[in-house]
Length: 292
Image (cartoon, rainbow, N blue to C red; front, side, top):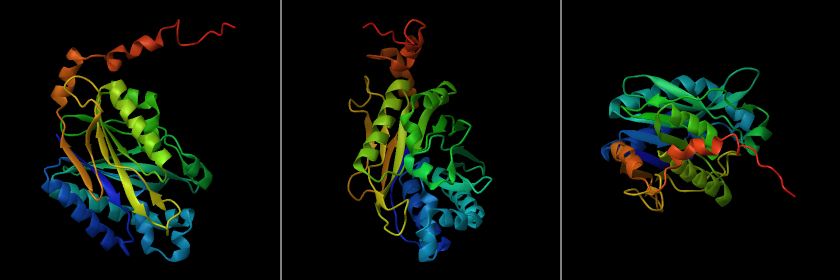
C-alpha cells in the first residue's frame, strides 16, 4: 500500500472555493504518485478562517462558530476527491460543534466508495483546555483501509500508549497521526510518541504536519515539524524507524508499505515488544514497592 503524509503549507485562502482548489491540487499530486492513502494535518479546517473578517479569525471561538455552516461543503469536497482519485483520505481535523457550545477536534476518514468515518481527539493539550470550548472524545475506533485496518491518533493522542495499544489489539496495522505543533519541543514530543507507538505495537505510523507561519490565526500561528512515516526498528526494517520523511519544501512523504513483510518480521524479531507486552502486566510488577 502506498501511503502519503503531508507537510501542509498553511496559507490564506480567501473563500471555500480557493481552499477546495488547494486540496484538489495537493491530493492530485499524491494520487499521481500512486498513493492509495493520503493524510492531511490536524486543524486543517482552521485554514478556512482566513476568509473571515479580521476580528473573527483572530478569535478562536468565533472562528469555530463561523466554520460550522461550511461542514457540509467540507464533506462533499473530500468525498468527491476520494472518489475521483480513488484515494482514501484522512482529511486532518474539523472542529465540530456537539452541544452546549462545545466542539470536538474530529478527524475524518473518507473512502472511494462514499463512506466516511471519524475519530475524535481524546486528550486535550493545554492550549485546547484553555479555550474553554473544546472537549475530548469518548470513543476509540478502527477503520478498513483497503484490506488493512487503520486507526487515527490525533496529535497529542499519539503520546499515550494504551489507547493505541487498544487499536492495535483491534487489528490496526497503520496508525495515522494528523498533527499540528508550534514549537520544536512539541514537534519532538509527537515524533517520539509516533516512534514509540511503532516500536511497541509493530505497526506503521504515518504523521502529517502543518508548515509555515500564519500570524492571523491564534491556533495556526507557528508550525513546526516534518511529515514522517515510522516503522518498528527491527530486522529488515529501518534501523532509525524512519521509512520516509519530508525535507525542505517537500509537500509529501510517500512510500510503499509492505504489511506482509511487517507481519513476517514478528517471527524474525531481535526483540518483540508487541509480543512481550503482557509481561509488563504481571501482578507482581504492576506496582512498585518502596524499599527504603
